[in-house]
Image 1: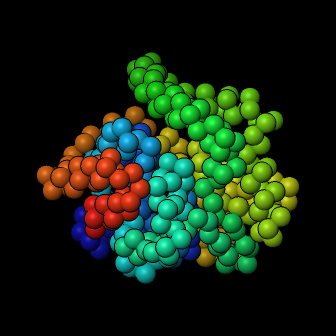
Image 2 (image 1 turned 90 degrees about the vertical axis):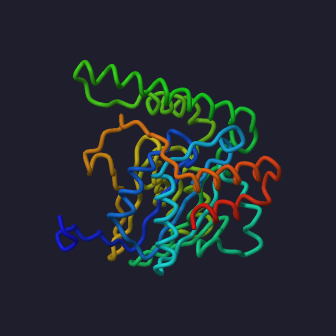
Length: 299
C-alpha cells in the first residue's frame, strides 16, 4: 500500500485520555499508539496516571510501543497541538513542578485545567483522585488496592484464555470485580456526585476526569460527568468534535482488537540505558529528576 492510499487521520477538536499506567505490563500502549496515529486533535488533555510512578518505585516495564506513545505525544506538541498534562495520583511526583510553570518538551503541567468546547460549554478537567476518600485518607489501603488490581489483571488474562478456548468472547473479570467493590462503597464515596457537585459549585457545565477506570458520560445533578476511562482494560477516549459534540470512543470495539494480545518488551540498547538511568534517578531522588528523565527518554 503506497502513502497516497493510506487512510487520513481523523481530526478532532479535542481528545482526553487518562490512566495509561505506562511502565506497567497492563498498559495497552500498542492500542494507544494506534489511536494516536489515526486521530489528530487541536487540544490533547492527558488526564492523569500517564506514567505509573507507584510501579516505578518497584520495577519498570517498557516496550517499543511505550516509546512510540511518548514520541507521538511529543510530536503532537511540536506540531502545534495544545497538550496539557494534569497529573494523577500514580504520577503525583510531577505535581511538584506545577508551581514552577514549566513545560516538558512543549507539554504543559497543570493541577487542573479548564476547557471551553466549540459550543461554549465550560469543562473542568481533573484526574479525580482528590475526590477519592481511599486515596486521600488511606494511602496504604490505596496501595494495597493497586496491588490487588494488578493481580486481578493477571488472573483476568488466564481466565480469558480459557474462555477463548471454550469459544466464549472476552469478558473483563477485573472490571467486574472492581464494579462490585465500587457499588459496595458507592454510598460512602460517591465519587461521581462529588466531582459533579464541585464542578457545578464552581460554575462549570461539566467535569472531565479519569481515575476509576470506568468510562462514562451522563448528567449528574444537572452537570455533565465525563469519565474518559483508561488504557489498561477498556481503551477508551473522550473526544470533542468541531461542533462541540462530545463522544466516548471505544478503540478496541471500533478497531475489533484483541484484548488478549500479550505485550512483549522490545527495547533498543540506547532506550534501555536511558530507562535504567531514569529508574536510578527515581530511586536516588524520589521527585527531583523524574520530569527531566522522562523528557529525555521521550525526546
